[in-house]
Amino acid sequence: MLFNSYTFILFLACVLWLHNLPLPWRVKKFNLLWASYLFYAAWNPPFVALLWISTLVDWHVGKRLHRADSRVARKALLLASLGVNLRRGNSKVSEYNMKLGFKRRTVKTRLGIDYIGNYNNTDDVDVANNHRATAGWDIFLTDRMYVQAVFGEYFRDPFQNIAERYTLGAGIGYTLVETKKITWEIVGGPAFQKTEFASVEPGADDSSSTPVLIGGTVYDHELTGWMDFLFEYRFQVVNEDSGRYNHHMVTTFETEITSLLDFDVSFVWDRIEKPQPTEDGTIPLQDDVRLIVGLGLDW
Image: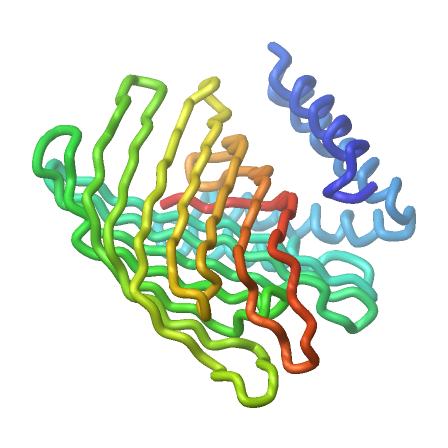
């Protein structure tokens, strides 16, 4: 049962439905436990033993979390548990998905930092290795209009022939809708971008710099007390060498596990209108579409 299969989506829907029935907490815990064992048994029954080890680790970490007085100690214990869980799996297949978010809002300002990454190594061959980190600092002029004083983005995806790409800019944003459960914003402005290519054809420049026109929208809908739907779309108009046009789209269903930890199912669509050919003349695919299932941390 693979994460990106319809079988898994159906399995996940059944588990979430059972978990949110008005049942005692002890029954809900048993539901999650048997679902975990069933999932691993469907892949490879011997790996249930690894899950038993992980269960014991998580059990003891949970008891320590309950007794820990320090916030730093709680985060360290949580990350230790995550480290164990993210390393489980077949030695021939290593896959890591992570989504992190940090937001701090005051009356007049807002700071946001986000990261989304996907790495997959199958039979000692990398088949996915993309990372995107963004940060923005907003200053509110009114309740709805704000200046994005600074926006930065780091992006890496060798399979799209991008070794590293840095973007720095600013802009103006406006909140179109803001209710108790729905927030919808738009933002846009100028920026500067530099791209280092993973490989290029003989005689071609291995990097490109360009002015950028950035635009985007973010839609956040609280579907229930424990599940949110997020839609984010950003586009960048650049020069020919940098790809002419690119966009990044993410739709995410966030299921709250704790106040800090979410279980995320994200559909990601990255597109580069004119990818840079590699040294052997191969032109990367314009579109990179993937389904990411993983844990999200929100501070």
